[in-house]
Length: 611
Image (tube, rainbow, N blue to C red):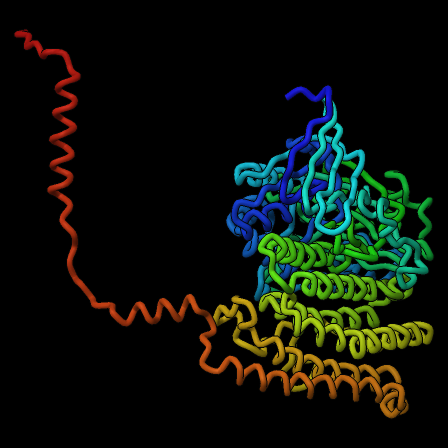
């Protein structure tokens, strides 16, 4: 098609960017909205180079469920990307001695996780899923977006694209910005928030490399008959230190490729001390020599430095039909791999809003408003999880207690909420948002301040081992289940009893807090009114959730845990054992005769020779 003059094409949705957010959003829309017309635009060609750099090559339970269950990529992920066995944390026993793995205190994963997660070769994933989207009918334009004309209301938006052969205008009612740090819609609408004063004090950067053909035995020999039933290498390994943490992430099982990077806080480590490959290597050699040896055992692929890592958005889903997802929406720090989790919640919300709008559903504006508020709230919570990291990352005792607490919320509330699709239920989201702001966030800000107090006192309150049980009463452990949603495949919307989890997790967090107060501040800390206020709030929220659980159980009485299993059970009632085999030899004989007849017809006349 000639592009000397600007051409126009009309779609239902135009997605700017074909990175992980763009290709995943496209596939989710294609799978959930029949006959939807989608265009993807990206300046990178379909065949990405090895040096297509990313921050974030590790998924967690929710993002893995999204890629596998919602996008139908379980087999693809197993066949193309490394497995992951949880999160490991390591603190140097002596800062000047980090040559061997035994020079660190460890919190290792000890078993196979109840829900799978994976590590990821990002460039490969994006390349492969883009091809899948094209096979499903999506259009891909290898070009650069030069302007976006955002209309008001339901009028068509226009995305102007520069291609090699000229310009193209793509028109669509819905435009999704998944172009990462280009902030195409963010700059157009003054929607991006930067600066530590707007990010709860967070001011961080990141340097990282990828290296292949490493000698992984430098990190761990793989022999661990007494400590665990899973690989320690195939995990996200965090080497912790003052004002920073270093990641070690395997991204390929055949080439022994690793992503090795540092996320650092400018208050402790200024950008100019890490912004070159040489400085980064010197930093590792001095502070995590084991990682430096691992890096030097292989062959460099690339290096990158990002001086400003964190940002967030004011609006995610506009009433004027534009949306921001992935890095274009928010990113803070890859510490818990929450970038893809925020992205997952955003993408499922976007699909539901667009589906409802295309179907002219009457409550679509209510959905957009509530989903926008929930996703902004989850972004805010993710931002809060980085508060005071610059002071606390390197303190093994305090940070281990913090990691334990934050994982309680993750497995005890966020994961079951996602599995049960409660993040798409408007009534639940209103109540959840109110409790999150009034109970959880207030507690966490208070606890982070108390952590700092203990660090200033150089306190050692012991090591909380996030992967092990036996550290809180009543046999609690982080991945404890309070509903049978995994065993009984309660994966349909609102089948998982999220209220049972909320009831229990508020209660067990209260126990965690009481133990923390006793260990850290003694009897005076236990009896302090400002501390008891938070205990009371947690127990009150637990009681409210117990009431919600009773209501939920009443409403779902007689409803099967899984309609698929219920249908199969009903169908099976007519089953009768029939010990017969269907005849097959006659068919084989008939096929053989037909084959011989065809061969005889094709063969030349046989001649017999007397020898």
